[in-house]
Length: 190
Image 1 (cartoon, rainbow, N blue to C red):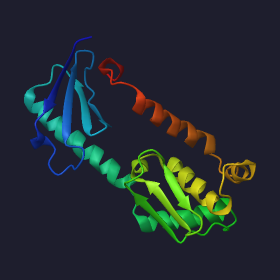
Image 2: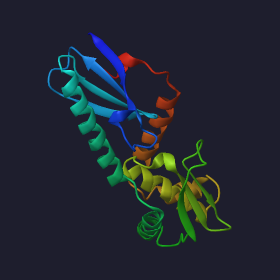
Image 3: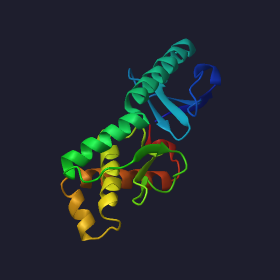
Image 4: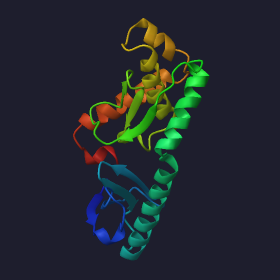
């Protein structure tokens, strides 16, 4: 399969924050479809090899807008996060876990969340933003359970047994961690 890769100038991604590097990958196998995804601080756009430069520019712009719209819909603010924590506590913990504060933080890169039971505070890593809702809910519920049980013993895991997507969410997060450790191999994504 022929694959032509090149970087787009920044002009195609104005005001995109951390996602301002665009890499276009042309493929002779790809006939009509165009797709895009985030990979770290880059956006990868996959297009058919036969596209003209003008078509490429248009599709890069379309795909950047589409990704941004998807991410905007997924990101929730601290107030919504606190409301979700209350709902999850009511639904799965009989309302016993009552945090004083729930917020996103940017200084947690090696863990998904943390809890300080003495202060009633829960912090979720910004890395969760944009992940599926059930994954964010699992991490939030995990930290809520720590308000009731500090360690990871049998009592703690028994609380999380009530959430039906615990194993799925843990598997998703394990996959993210594993993918972050892998070296970049271009042909895996074409």
